[in-house]
Length: 76
Image 1 (spheres, rainbow, N blue to C red):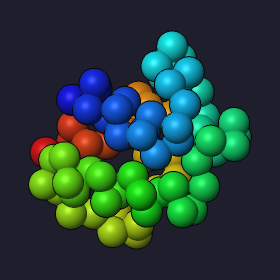
Image 2 (image 1 turned 30 degrees about the vertical axis):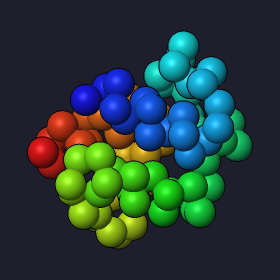
Image 3 (image 1 turned 180 degrees about the vertical axis):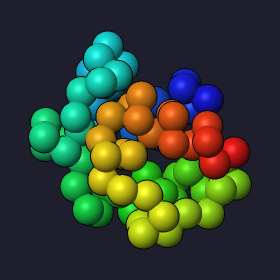
């Protein structure tokens, strides 16, 4: 699960530095924005078969790799 989430975020962000620090706030670091959120959601649907709307999760749920892994673990 963590590897897949990490790969999704790396693909969207275009930077694999997040693999080293999975608690980096992607929004504060300027790595993820509203368009990026939509891209991440589309890739989650593609990879996990889980259809999510932007309103299904809060910003904090996608702020870090670890937060997104935890959120998706609870949904799957």
